[in-house]
Amino acid sequence: MKKSNLILLWASLSAILCACSLNDEPQRPERSEYIKVYETSADKTVDNIQIPFGGVQDGKIHILSNVDLQWKYMVTQDASTPDWFKITRVDEIEPGHTVVTYDAESILDLNSLDSRSGKLSFSCPPQSLGKFLTVRQGYPLRFIDDFSGEPGQMVTITGRETFTTQEYSKLSKDYFDYISFNAWAETDNEFLSKNITLDITVSGGQFYDTRLATFRVNVPLGTAADKSNLHYLLIVGNDGHLSSQTKFIFSTANDDRVFVHIDNLAAYQVTPADFSILYDDDYAYDDDEGADWI
Image (cartoon, rainbow, N blue to C red; front, side, top):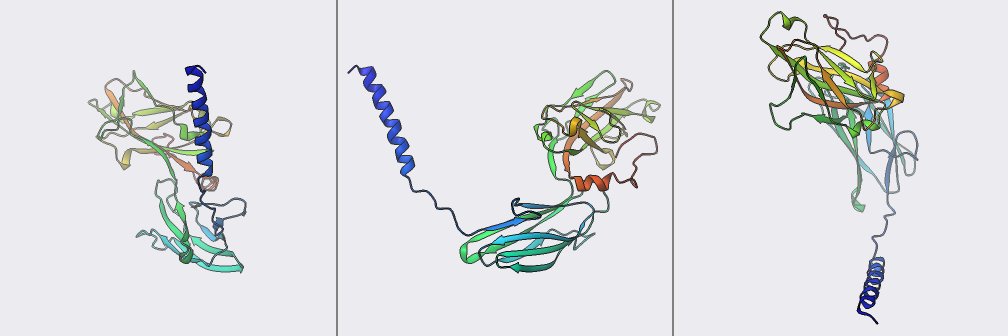
């Protein structure tokens, strides 16, 4: 037999023996004990509970298990609302099926990025089995882009320039997204400082307030990113979704003696429940100078 054929045969035999060896390794048996959690359907288990901004009364979590359960909850509190999440009842409606009923307070400042969270714990120590369930209220952060990666750095444009962001693949799944960013301006011309604006254009999407692809905000004077120059824009994509090719384009029509700084572009997920509260007919957002911004 030729040497080349012998080498090929040996390689084939080695691959077969290796595969057999892997298949013969003992597999870890699947546990028969379980703890499963769902909110509305046993076919759709959950690992977290998203509390809408409006709060919840008599919210329910269903726990299915074939072991004896111990449970406790550890929810982060804050000074303004020390008991925003409360377990009100725990009922075993049938063997292996427990219903936990809870109340959760609302977050009064709807157009903010405040959030709070905690964990529910369900466990069976004798079986070394447990499950944590995260409780969240507020907009979950999807991404944040500081543009530079270095503290104190930002994007700066004048009237002759534009800035286009990268593509954000995480914008491909949700119907609504809350976009926030810092924008502040500097100029040596006092007259020009009275009405500095910034246009934000979204490619492949539109802004809910106007149903247009471009949104304009007023930009205050400043020297750094802070709460006074943080803007919020609620965006919905064309045909119901933003895409992984979505980009944002920042531009300004101001004089070249005006420098507009931009930093900390972030996106937050907005649930349909929060959206319906945020855009109730009772809410209308407009500042004193006529710029549309949330």
